Structure formats: structure tokens, C-alpha cells
Image 1 (spheres, helix red, strand yellow):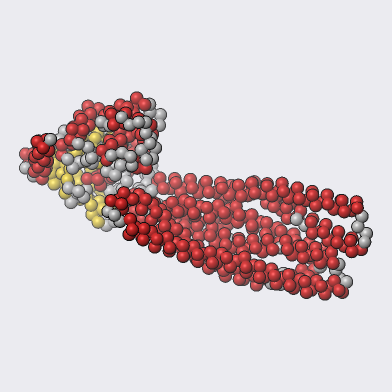
Image 2: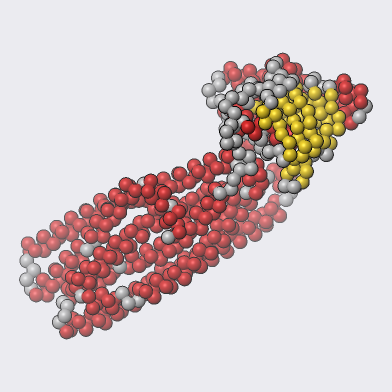
Length: 581
């Protein structure tokens, strides 16, 4: 009953289609009674010697009408019950996808991609089978069993009927116990499948690294271990699944034995005819499916229950970043102010005492060693995470007072680990606005110095770049990701180390284009190569989550600190490279 209550919303939503299917199933159960009746009547007529040609022809017509009726009705219930069940899969996948799109990065640190894929495939398929085959089995088994038993009880012999159903209570107890074991085994097999999904996804994504280290044999062994574990868990589930049918048939066979013993005695006593006994055994044979369906229903219900609980647990996870209850209706770019006292990931302090402001249209440069907190500053502005102590203000308002969609709609973001889709170049660039024209795409790609690379490709802007842009170089990926952000001309552009894979000449050209096209628009650039931020209105030097130096390029050179020393070192390296060339 648990799973029925949980899915009741769907059954109410599709009640008309389910009702049509149930009516069709019920009529099939009634029509199924006709062939045994006709068979019993003809046998008794032959035994008594009074079967006429017209009677035989009439009974054959009854059989044909019943056959055609069942043919059509079976088509109807399959369409209206099994077909409707796919609607549940569609709804649940949409809910999961919508939920995934709302969750903060912390959610994806807890749940791996393969695990989420398993929920969206295997678990939803189990629910679909429950809403289709499970409902069909429950309704068909109930109606067929009820109609058949009542017919056996009232039209043939109540004594034989009572004897025939004696083994059924014992069968119910046995299948119930087996169902509990199936529940536990299926839960373990689903978890193992999630782990297998994770392993496959991770191995395929990192196949280049694996091969470059010559690590294929070790990776194959690791996969085989996970694969073997999944196999063992599925085998355990299959063991319990396989016990259902033999167990049901055992009790059905016992019913046959009891029926034949009692029926033969009653035929000798003259209480029933041979035709009645044949009809009764035919009806008993019709009860095999409902009894088998009970086992199937136990099995599919336990699977559906496990899968629903897994999906429900996933949907119950709440994002750490939420829209405000009463958001500010209008958002505009303006003065940006950081007033962060403290921020930490999972109780480990990452930022401390971050206080600065940036006027609209200015450029901010963020520099410092790896792990100094530069990316964290940017992610807090995007509200991928929220500040623990303190706030970030835009136009005098805490950014947490704006809708997430409004805030992020104001920004263009190019992350360190840029992601490209396995589609064409043009589709990747216009991802944020599919209505943009080819001329817009060409302009954006020229700004980031990747236009000539693209037109030299055989398919040009229609070139398919493969998963995560596998066919492109590191610099081409970075510049394409920049073009995707810059084509939207965002009020706030955030570049997180987005020039690390390009040469110095290309970097200068891109920076010059940024200065020329970003008038009255805010730009935030994080970089390891200081030449990318020398033009910034404010440069912050980060170290261990704190600001250790701040000012313009000239101010920081005058301090003769980390910035000045690093800049001079990088300039010497560049000069050495130029001399070498």
C-alpha cells in the first residue's frame, strides 16, 4: 500500500485512461469464461449423443466472437494502461531534471553523475513497470480470479471450489516472505548499479589520462571488480525473482491434485458431469495466471517501492542557495561591494576579511597563488554558494535579495573548467540565446581571436567539436567559452583564468578587445599571468583566502611585494622566450 499511496497523485491524474483500461481488462476476464463453457457443453452433448450440427456451428460462432472481442479489448487495455505508464516516466524524469538544475554545487559534490544517471534511468524504469505491468497484473489478477472463482462456485460445484483454493493462503504467506527478501536484494542491486554507472562515466571521461599514464590494465581490473559486484547483487535479486514462479506453480499443482481427487469422486457419485469437471479444470487453469501475477506483482511492487524511495530521497534534498521570499523586482548593474567577514566550505575557512568595492564599468583583476581564493570570490558573486558571515552588495542591495535568475542573467561567466557541448561550434556559442545570428557569432569569435581557427576548419562554424570539445585545443576551448559569454554582452563579465591556454600575443589582442567593448560594463578577471590584468582599475592579490595587496598596476609595482616580484619574473621569462625565438 505504501507505493500505491505515493503514486496515487499519478493515478488520479490519469484516472480516465486507467478506467478505460480496467473496463477493457474486466471484459476480457468475462469473455475468457466463454470457451470453457462452450467446451463443457459440447462434451456433455457428445456424451449424451444429442449434439446437432446447428448447435456445434452456434458454439463455434460464440468462440469466434469471444476471440475477436478479446483481441480488440486486449489492444485497448495495453494502450490505456501500459501506454499511460510511460507518462509517469516522462513526469518523473522532468521532475528530476528540474531538480538537478536548481541544486547548488554542494549537491553535486555529494551525488556523482553516474548515481544521478541511475536514478533517471533504472529507478524510473522500475516505476514505469509498476504503473503499467504492476497495475495490469493487480487488476487482471483480481478480476479474473474473482469472476472465475464465482463462476466455479455457483455454476459448477462449491465443494470442488473450496478444495481447490485450500493451498492459496499458504502460498500468500510464502510469497510475502519472499517479497521482503526481494525488497532488500533489489535495493542493494540498484545501489551497485549506481556505483557501476559512476565507474563507467568516470573512466570514459578520464580515458585520455588513463592511457597517457599507461594505466589501462589497472583501470580495467578496477572496473571488473565493480562489474562483478553488480553482477553478484543482480544475481542475488534474480535468485529471489526466480523462486516466485516455481513457488506459485507448486501450490497450483497441489490445487490440481486435490481437484482431480475430489472431482473424480464426485463424477462417480453423479454429483457433476464429465463436462462439468473439464470446464472446472479449464477454469482452474485460468487461475494459474492470476496466481502467477500475484508473484509478479509482489516482485514489481518491491522494486517500485525501492526505486521510489531512492528518487524521493533525491528530490527531498534542498539547495543551499535559494531565491528570497520577497525578491527585489528590478535589477541593474551598479556599484559592487564585497563585505565578507568569513566564508568556508564544509567548516574549512576559505575566505576571511574580504572588503572592497568596484564601481560600475570598472575592471577588477584577481591574482595570487593557486588555492588563494580567487575562484571562490567569483562563485560567491554568482551565488553558487552563499556567504557565511557578511554579504555582497550590488547597487546597495544584498545579492541574496535578488532572484537567482535575475542575478545570473546579469552576468556572463567563463569558468576555469569550461564546458563545451557535443554539438557544433555555432550551437555552443549561441547557447545563451539561440536567436542570435551568424554575424553575431562571427563578431564574438573575432573578439576572442578564434574566428580564423574556425573558418579554417572543413565545416567552419558547423564543425561538431565532440564531447567537452574533445576535437579542439586547450586554447580554442577557452576562447570558444569566452565567445559564448561575450556574445551576450553581459553587464558583468567574469573570466576565471580564461586566458591561461593562449599565447601572450593572443592574450594582448583579447585584452585590448575587452577594453574597447566593455565600456560602462563591469569586468572581473582572474589570472596567473599578470599581463592580463595590468589594465584593471583595481587589482587584488590573494593569499590564503585574504587580500594581501591591492591597488592599480602602478601602485602594486611601487609596493615591491608579491605582485611586483611576480610581474618582474614573468617579464623576464617572456623576454627569454622572445630571445629564444
